Image 1: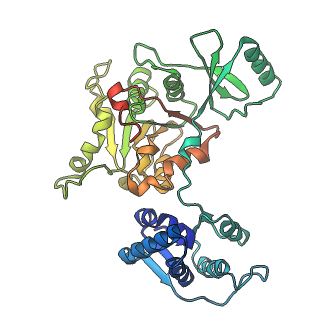
Image 2: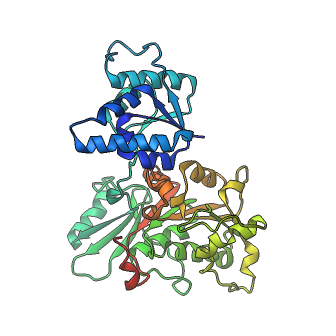
Image 3: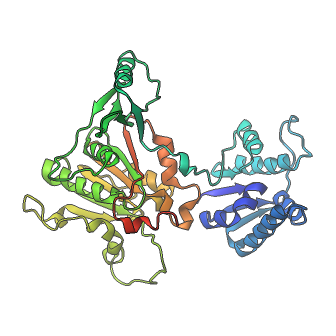
Length: 398
C-alpha cells in the first residue's frame, strides 16, 4: 500500500482530495503545529484551510500514522535546524531511511528541491494541467511555400516544431478545404494508413489519426483519450473486431475495466464473478456486432476481466482493450500494460476529465500520457471534439 508523507501546505490546499486518494498518510507533529498556527492567521483563506484540514484529519484518523517524535537532527548544517520545514524534512528522512516505499507530497517548490537534494522522492499533488496537455497531434496553418520548406527542413534533419516520435501532424493548407494528415516517424512525415472506409471511417482529422494509430501493428501501446462523445470507445472496439476478424492479426480480444462507476452503488451483488462485472462492459458491448463478417460468433473470441484478476497473467495474440482508464491508478495501468506478449497490443482508452473523485487528483491516466509521449513503442491521440450529438454538447461545460 502506498504511504505518503504530507507537507503542511499540500494538506491545507487539498486535505479532502488527499484523504479520498490515499489510505496510508503520515503526518508529523511539526505539521500539526503549523496547522494550529494557521488556524489563527490573519489571512482568512489560511484560517479556513487549516480548520478544514484539521476536521479532515479527525474524520480520517484510521488512515493516518501520526509521528510525534522529532528524532535527532541529522541533516547537513547547510539546512538550518531551526526552520520548521527542515524539521519536517528531518523526520521524513529518518522515516524514508527505514522504509523506501514512502513518497512525500508537497506543492512547495523549495521543500521539494530540498527533498531531492537528499534523495527523497517527492511529488506535487494535483499536478494535472489538462489545458496544456499533450494531445498526440499538432495542427499547423501553412501556405504552399511553408509546407515545401517544412519538407526540406525535415529532409535535412531539422525539426523546428519539435515533433515527437509517433506524433500526428495535421496541416491546414491555406486555400484548401481538406487538411493533410501525417504521422511523424523516424524524422519524416508518413502518410496515414487507414482501415477500409466501408468498415469504419473517421469523421474528422483527429479520428483519422486515431484510426491510423489503432491500425498500426508496429506500435504495441496505444493511448486513445478524449472527451465524451469523441468516438474513442467506438473506434477502439471496432478496430478490435477489424484486427481479429478482418485481418487475423490477433487471436482474441480481452476487455479490461476497473469496476468503478458514477451514481449510487447497488450494494452487494450475489453470483459468480462474470455476473458481477458484466454490466461494467456494456459501454463497449454496445459496439459489438453479434455476428462477425465471417459468420463467426464474436462472443467466443471475447474475454472480459478486471485488473484484480490479471496479475501474473500473460496474453499472447491478444488485442487488449482497457477502457475507462481515468478510473485507474498508475500501478493498475502498469499491471495491465505489462501483460502483453510480443504478438499482442494494449489500447488504453478513457477521459481523464471524467474520472471519479478518488482518481481526480494526480490522475494516473493523464500522468501516463505525460510520461510516455514520444516513446517509439507508444502512440497517443487525445480527441477533443464531441461528435455524438448537439444535445450532448450542452453538458460539456458542467
